[in-house]
Image (cartoon, rainbow, N blue to C red; front, top):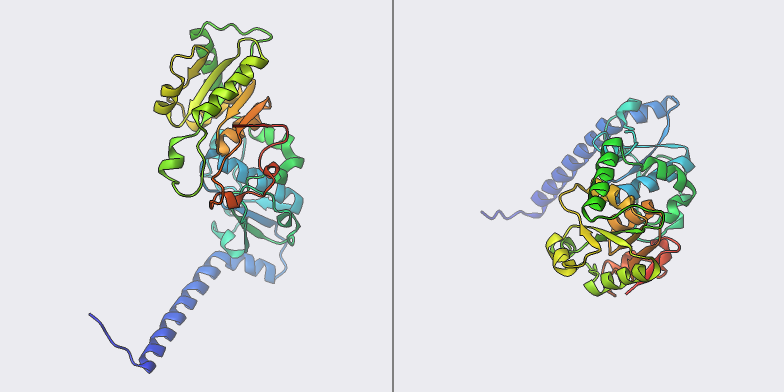
Length: 324
């Protein structure tokens, strides 16, 4: 049904909609922010807060937490971590909610929000923002934000006992099954292969998939650098990985683990081959050995390419080796 509105009727309709929206916005704002606004009005001391929009998978959360931890520390603020955050389940990281401080659970909504527009680059201006309550939206995938807190973050990113024991048991089982004895010079290389979801879920955005030739080249590097290295592979694309690596005797493909157990398992190795993505990045950072990464993580001219600065060093860690 089509209703024709004259000028006056349309203006009244527009005013009604606008007024309704404003009332709703004010209600939402004050229902969330009323306690903070009142405490500030009466001059009651309270901590400053720092909010990060935790999104994505395990490694994304780790990047966002590392950024938030360092920013909050430098600003003498409280980093908000919800009880439901996956990091509290896997690591020695405690929740820190607004409810713990007597405020509404959605109080991040009250603060000035800044969006990070280069998710894989370093934006120095983020570290120079006014020392007020602040909320940051973005993936913030540069190690430079938290370079002063790496040692603290490594301790915080120690997996809990259950995950650690499970990963250690699996490593022993793999080596026993492959008849590999742990000796002083034995080298184990963790390999993370990210493949299918980049094309199925993010087609057109500009992610590059590391080809099998890259994986063979990276393995060749370790075979030429060490005596009889052994490769443990974790992947989100088991069928493709088995097809590519089938019949290679110094390779074991792990299956059936959670993301946390796979990461813990790979972090127990000596060195890392990563393909693309933040999961392999975090595996390499936790492992602290030689790391090889795929040289072309994005399609030139794509939307994903715009997330990097021209210098990859904002994202990839110093000393890591780029390979084709």
